[in-house]
Amino acid sequence: MTPTITALSLGAGVQSSALLLMSAHGLLPKLDYAAFADTGWERPETYAALDRLENEVARPAGIEVVRLRAGDIRRDALDPNSRFSTMPMFIRNPNGSKGMLRRQCTSTYKIKILLAEARRRLGAEVFEDGRVGRVKRGQHLSMWVGISSDEFHRAKDSGVKYAVNEFPLLQLGLTRADTQAYLDAHGFAAVSKSACIGCPYTSNAGWRNLRDNHPQQWDEAVEFDRAIRAGNARANANGRPLLGEAFLHPSLLPLDSAPIDAPPKRQHLRLVGTDEADNWENGDPDGCSPWACRSGRPEQPPEFSEVAA
Image (cartoon, rainbow, N blue to C red; front, side):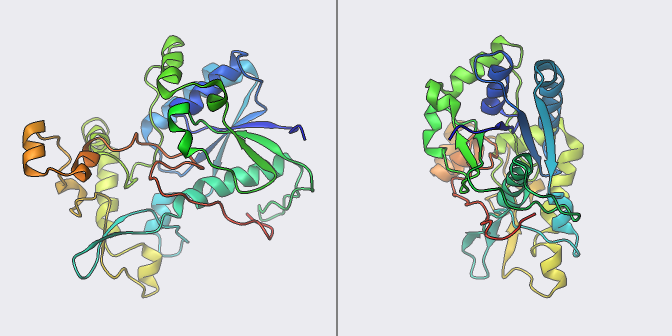
């Protein structure tokens, strides 16, 4: 069936920004709305890019940009009275081995609210407490997701019938470089990669950028790293601290003393000589897409067998 609504999952990164521009320029069908899922602790560049996209691209084209928020990921982790969905923090286990917490943050702070907005747009009942009910059988919308042809393996279904993920860049055969070139040609060369300030998958280059160019946010990340050493505040308040120590950096060192400065390449290879260390420096391109988080660990959306928020 032909969807009644066409939406964009907008992260304000390269691919999703290119999709918004292509729709505004008439190269793709006109979007009904573009939804940005805000964790409450996005990078300054992301908010700046989103403001510019809304003011200079979406609004003149008559495309609504809606900003959604399920909470504040930093505040929730540090508040003993808040429910917190874990970030994929690096763990030093009691026996000295290295582990990682389960990633729940993408589902809670992005996928759930994007799907709730989709149901609302499709006419589902909205209750007084903000919950959104079910969609009538047979109704669905098209949700554009910014996945380019060189990242086709990241394309995932939404997991629900009423929001069908579509990938226009794949259909057009466009690579990330193609979309970046398109943005460059239209004055959006400095589009950043969206991610939380305290995302554990931030590369060393990303941490240096935060430290050198955004000292306030760097201080927040350092303090957050220190505060979550024994787990989130609610778990500790309930007597369930981590059986180990949590860190934002894979070196399992406090962020302000972690080896984030890039050593000379020869020294780097001679002293370390592992692919893991190279990943610390460059990493996957930093970014967080609701259905394709760059952590490489698939995360399924929550089941909506009952009325969901």
